[in-house]
Image (tube, rainbow over all chains, first blue to last red; front, side, top):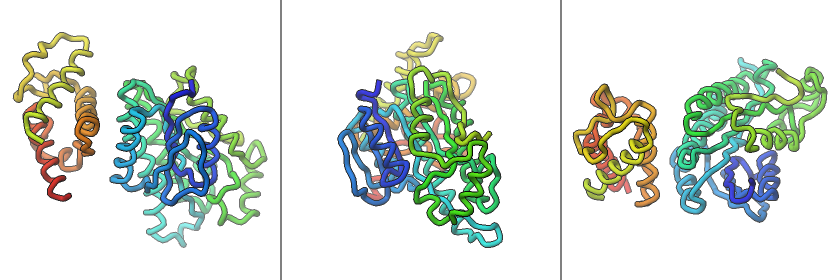
Length: 234
Length: 103
């Protein structure tokens, strides 16, 4: 099934995005990835776009290139995201703008343009990234979690709007994984979050890939509008 | 790009959509005055969405023009540019002219 399927992954320069790009390229998918800066790695079956996914013109241009080269898109993984941990009383408005711009607006833009391309074949799988911070209501993550709540609502509603076109849209809520996203958070704080998880362990890249594998397998055509959290969170 | 080229793209996209619908519609009768939404329309709201996306894709694939037809102006105009085949073609022409003027 992987052969000749085209997959877009955003935010592939490092972290989970890089892992997913290398993993799925290795599985035989034709992977198109993007980030604002060039990655320091490359692999077979992988093509990189320099693009800021929160910029509408750059997203449209990237999809134009994908359409030209591949003529189709089967899977889109909205991985690009940023986090900021701060108390409400200390959060500048500019942080709200930048977090919503990357986490929500970019996801929206990539969903919209992906669906246009997927619609042609009456098939598509869109996977968005949420976080366990949404259901756990973690203090200090109000803006970050709110941006991901917006992603969850977007996911659930467009799942309905895109059902007509054979496109499913689901989301993953990872528990803390050791990436740059949580680099600025003290280890003690991460430890406290993990202690509150039913499964008291840090998440792994492989856990994320496992959930994506489930969402994109052919048998999952009847699964849409769902959010799967890691770590036993519900 | 000439208005006739734009009309051809709109009409060919519409023919594809209408031919996939259950009800019969004489596709030979499609012209500038054909209603795209409302009671006497050949489309429902969802297929109108499909038409706009299909026209965007054809412009990108056949002419290398990337343009978002459903921009903010289009969605907020009292007189929707999506009323008829003719008004849609006119609106696309306007967008393309603006695009070429802005480089």
